[in-house]
Image (cartoon, rainbow, N blue to C red; front, side, top):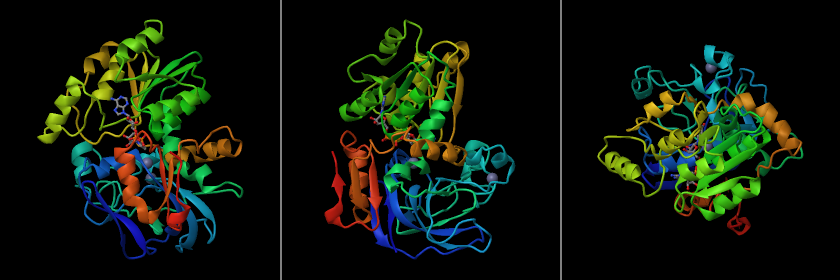
Length: 401
Ligand SMILES: NC(=O)c1ccc[n+]([C@@H]2O[C@H](COP(=O)([O-])OP(=O)(O)OC[C@H]3O[C@@H](n4cnc5c(N)ncnc54)[C@H](O)[C@@H]3O)[C@@H](O)[C@H]2O)c1
Ligand SMILES: [Zn+2]
Ligand SMILES: [Zn+2]
């Protein structure tokens, strides 16, 4: 089959590789119809996540048709259309029983002594292709993919919904939803969201649905800020305003009730601390850039809530523990417990309470996946979300930007 492989920093290639096969009784093989590129893929593309190996098949946001199932009773039948969560979970361990699917104890087959246990204190759960720390699962930017624990993860798509309507159930829609849920929004709240990429945009939409009186979105890319404004957010361009001062002014001097870091480890901007982080990263003395995290913690009101859907992989310097403690802030974060949110969010899509297609800027053939990565990494203003389709001819491609 054809699949997109990671070869090194900023080097991804569509190659011919072996087809996947059923390995365990609860596996299913899915023929991919749509798959998307995520901000998390950019961390791999930029070489920020350790333990990737040349040849790893990329992609954790995907959906398609069931073509084969294991003998263990996956509950799926051939021909069904399914969306697959990026989190792999057994559904039966201590954590899964608490609906903390991204903390599953049984989905990462790598040896217990792996790097993730050393770095995090506990072994990471299984995620599709998120390096060899999270299992060694081939991803779905390919013609076919093997889905483990297929009785727990995939959700069957009802007739009448297009791929574009439901594809983002695989990750960014539940991620934006959980980011807003982690803010414990109360009526009248002001919520500030850093980053107007796909995760930030879905967090904005979710926060407004959950009753936030006001959402303030922060980025510097005009097109992305415009999408945030269209959703109903007020916006701040961090290149022309002092973000903390602007937020204070917009919230009657007290600061936002809740803040969301939808940027993560690769924050941009010409700030002293960001330059410091970049220098330390280059010397391998620090793994992650904490600019947005610091700014969000400083801006949040006393007693407020901090939600961090943005991915961090290791260690951040100059973490403002004083602001966290002295202001009595609460932090909630994590890889999304995707499976927990699927029934609710699917229902909301069917009832048209959520818009899931407004952010798609490119629909490209899988063969053009490398160009899709380049656009999403280097032309972020125009490229708000790229969907790849294995069966698509080049003549059918769609670039709405
Ligand atoms: N927790 C999870 O399960 C989960 C799931 C999916 C994605 N993520 C993470 O969420 C983050 C966002 O993903 P995405 O797909 O939206 O990525 P993206 O790269 O498309 O968007 C990031 C946005 O942040 C903006 N930004 C950069 N520096 C900034 C700054 N200093 N202030 C304000 N905005 C700034 C960029 O301009 C960009 O628009 C990534 O870290 C990704 O890995 C987490
Ligand atoms: Zn993703
Ligand atoms: Zn489990």
